[in-house]
Length: 141
Image (cartoon, rainbow, N blue to C red; front, side):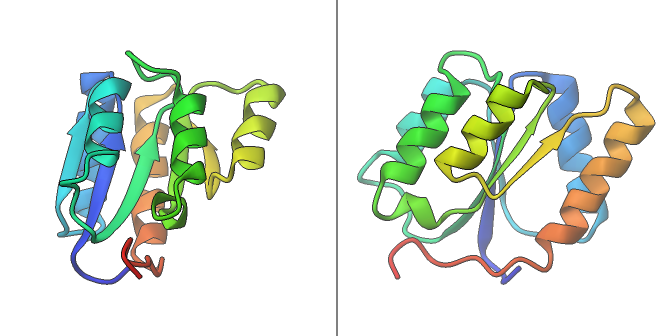
């Protein structure tokens, strides 16, 4: 992952967010991390004309409060600039329909949240290691 990538985390659960942020930092990610605790705030940020034209990676819980996570993904992948943004679905939603729908809409990867705290932390750490290798395009390119 190149420097100056902004990691967007769309997570309603404060405890989950803290584990995600802590374990991403443990991997050496030093880039800016922005949290959105509801879908409305995320969509307002993403679809505002004042949004930075930089590189983003979105970690999205499709069970986010305030907006349907699948609808957020649909809007992102329908936008001519945002569709380039990698979207990691990190959610407890494990039904095949949701998984298929996310891939059909263009998510980069779908990862189930483990229930055990240690497994959750380990999974996020692995996501962080993976993100360090991802090449992310600038939204204006």
